[in-house]
Amino acid sequence: MGLAVFSFVETLIVKGQINYLMIVVLAIMVAQVVFKNRYFGIFLGLVVGLVSLGLFLAVLSDYRKFPEVTSNAIELITVGSLLSLAGAILAAVMVFKYFNQEDKIAIQ
Image (cartoon, helix red, strand yellow):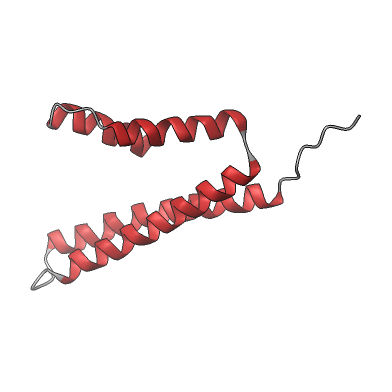
């Protein structure tokens, strides 16, 4: 949620445009926090995990474009890997949390 807010504010300040995608992402995340739907939580965790994997692969691709290892290349691989790893870990925690959650069935 923090990255969505950061991306929204950055786009607003730098480009002067409203980033509607980040508004939708933030709304989905807030809805999940409020309603705590098991199946949507699993789905959201898997999506975040796949996006984190894709971002990590993009970082590796950009790193390979450097002709030699410089401080910029090391900074790119370090920061990009840490952000991707953090997203993957949080996605895994979310998936395991909602897999272990029992369905709430109304007993009458």
